[in-house]
Length: 187
Image (tube, rainbow, N blue to C red):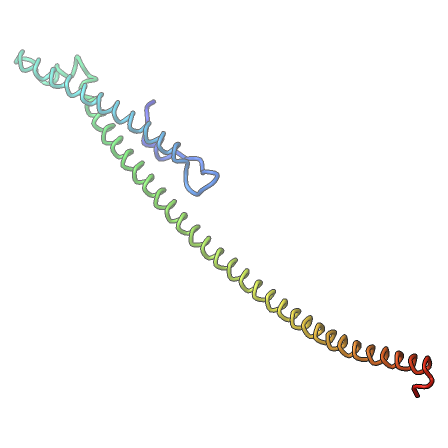
């Protein structure tokens, strides 16, 4: 695949579903494509340099051939060499751009991660504070209910004691009356 600077500039990565940033595999695959293209261009550039050296040595051997005839039979030797150099520089620029974009996205991802963590801590603190205040309110409510129930229990115990005493008095009086009617001489 012939990779152009426009391909790198126009490349858009799909956002991930579960975290902020781009799909790391997709970014890595694209960087791999850039590396392959750069290696191809570097190899092509080296081959063109070797052809240029071979042509120069051939012209040096003949001695009578000027620079014009050398470029005439092999017009692609001079142009691709310049083009290859420009492509190599362009590829190097693309790689630097890709690295810079990658680092920028990583920085943005780290910043977003830190922001989300901070928001999580704030939310957790708020939830904990709400739970503690709710628990304190419930405890106060239950303590008030306990106090009311203890008061009612004490009142019932007091009532029970009084009732037992009055019942005992009544039963004793009834027994006494029964004995006095059964035994009239005891009076």
